[in-house]
Image (cartoon, rainbow, N blue to C red; front, top):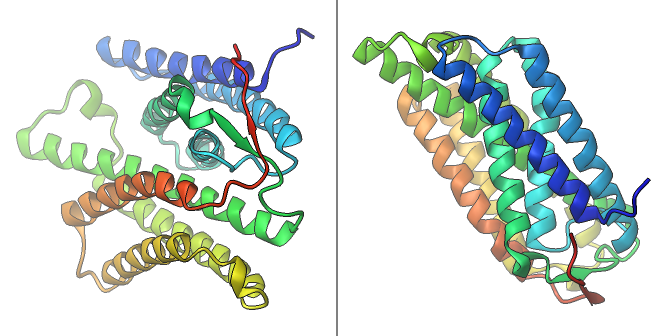
Length: 280
């Protein structure tokens, strides 16, 4: 096997995600439904390549690769793809693969294209504590859930637009029903709140024993994000926040979550940093 760097494998994964987006776009331009099997296969290959790249990075940094903005964006994209591979076939959402490929392509290509995000790698950022590593992995995986929620919320808004304007061709003809999308959104919202809450619970079990390790800025941002999504879930269950307002809220919250990633990462102490050589 060629001596590729971890970034090389991640570029290969990005190419697969871009290929998925191109496949979906061509099908939409021809007003045809793209092959779910082909889309699933392309994204699965990309997922496997990205998993291997992140595995190599994990070996290099001696832990889950979540030590800089580049790694966090990559892990978020990986989480979103992993969830699609599980729930996409279950809900038979052909367009979800198209939108997920676009999201993953954007997150991975942007992170790879900005060298400053990967200029320094933190080694051993979890201090050998598996619980803190587990806490961080669950937290970032919940971001993947919220990413899919933002995508299905976008699909919901597109469906509402198509029904109001009577645009029932092209992209709009392949969208799931309003009822199905609302049902999926509620499930994703609940799953994301549960996962992020579990992450905070795991982290707090360790933090209460050593409060000196708690980063106040990171804790405030994470708790605020979880609280915001929890409030949205409560309002949705009481049917006080529904339809387009719920969809827009989920999209805005995910945008805020992405913006908070850099703040969360920059709040970490520079533990055992190692400069990164130029890589392919």
